[in-house]
Image (cartoon, rainbow, N blue to C red; front, side):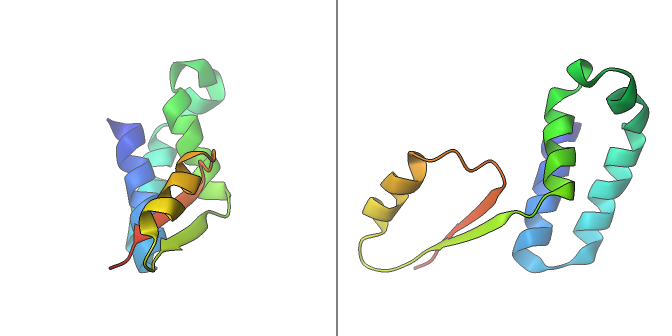
Length: 88
């Protein structure tokens, strides 16, 4: 729940450049700071959100006539710090 919400807030920030989303994610991460420090194994998804917060997510826009082929290539890649937008 909270981890997914945090990642979604960070994705929204990437898509919109609205700092309010990043600030909300930061507040959520701060609320779980004690648990993250004490036992990362208790909140692994939140650790992933923390990685996203401090990382540099890749923005991928899929556009053009052969979107299906491009999406197939993307599905074969592990890109955890990425936001994908399908145009058209």
